[in-house]
Length: 145
Image (cartoon, rainbow, N blue to C red):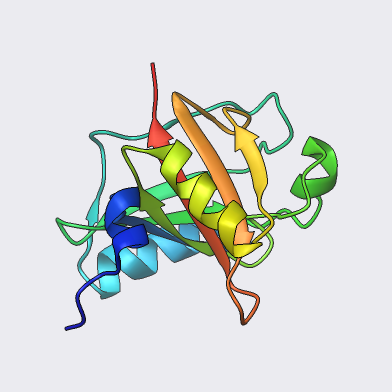
């Protein structure tokens, strides 16, 4: 395993969840719980604000360490919120940080543009979204008051 570089260490990132999008949240929940044996997650869940652009259903399951967010697909969520990056069109991988300022500085220094969703979708989470070099969506969030 490679040691993280100083920029990554400074940002204090930890894998938090993987978000998969679907047209049928109930079918996906049943697959991941009934077929794969993951547990429904019922603690430490984000409070979704369905009045600010994304009103889709989301189910939360876990392997006991990492959450899997099963979100209803909405290809228009970016337009509705005025954001460039849409995290619920294809899904994303999400990291949690304790230092959003360091993360944003790293991205700015590297010339990586990002969409700052602030608290638009989740109360108490400051979220940013950006694309990796292959076009995969990455979320980084910090829990705030």
